Length: 307
Image (cartoon, rainbow, N blue to C red; front, top):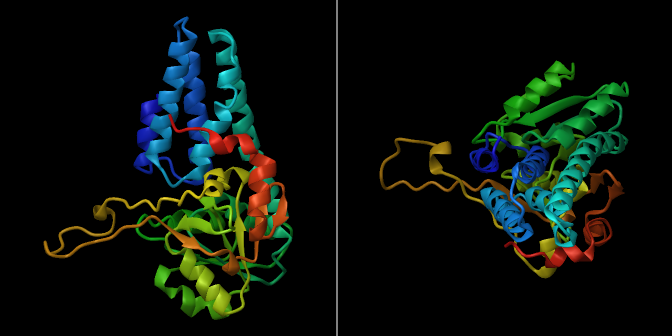
């Protein structure tokens, strides 16, 4: 798939899920590098930078996408010629993709330790990391059941219930607005992440914050499952995460002309509503997000420009 096609598929949500978006972006940059047949290092670098911007602009809220292109192109400035630059981009893309896939498995093992035998779990949207935790707990022999939200307007919950059902896990789907009503039956909420901010706040699928609020009110722990590349270095510089709003036709059509629709894709859940974050480097407090960004992603990534 060409880079422009990948960017368009990400924008239109044909490619969705933070991990898959990140891996697809790294693969697109790798293919872009491999297809260059010129001899100018300056021209080649400009093509890669343009490709980076095209990908990043396709989903501005997804920090996994930003971190993926940064990881893939982090050594561009050190290349001495076109051949070495091709090899560098290809190698760094492969490393990122491999580490991304391994991270989900590791998160599953770590997060499953927080789920007890007999627990009733609530999950939201269609997070591969969150599902890895739930399925690993079930594979450990724990007798668990799951409530999954419908996750309007794209109804990613349908993917979640199919995945869990195929794994043999008892699962019930509820509408998003039933979250507070069902919370009295829940033992733990397990959700994914699009972005973790440096102050520990979670940016995730719209509706996550109401789960956090209802869980906090009911004294139900909420565990976030997030690969380290979902932590945002840019928030350390004070940048506010942009909450993307998508086309209103995703919500409803053929309404009276004086009726407006808002369609935010994400919301922000404060750190105080989060019990812990399961990452591939361990189970951490949301207030340790700053250390993860510095120690895992490095100071140098803070000062990379967009173009």
